[in-house]
Length: 82
Image (cartoon, rainbow, N blue to C red; front, top):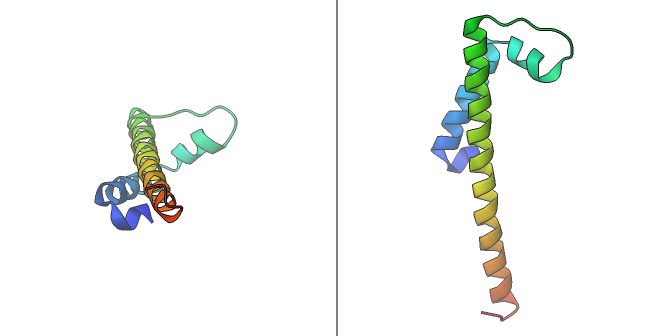
């Protein structure tokens, strides 16, 4: 549900998918085995794709962190602790 509520996440996800579609070699690097040769353009795309993956993961972790706080607060209210 993060893509639907976070514009930054949706934008980064869209860019990541665009790069993957434009440069199929990225999937080969990440999923396949064996030797692979990259052009300078493909290498730059791979680096960008990996940086986007890190940013996406950070946003996902932050979302889960705050979701946990929300759930915890609700639970504490339900059991009468607060």
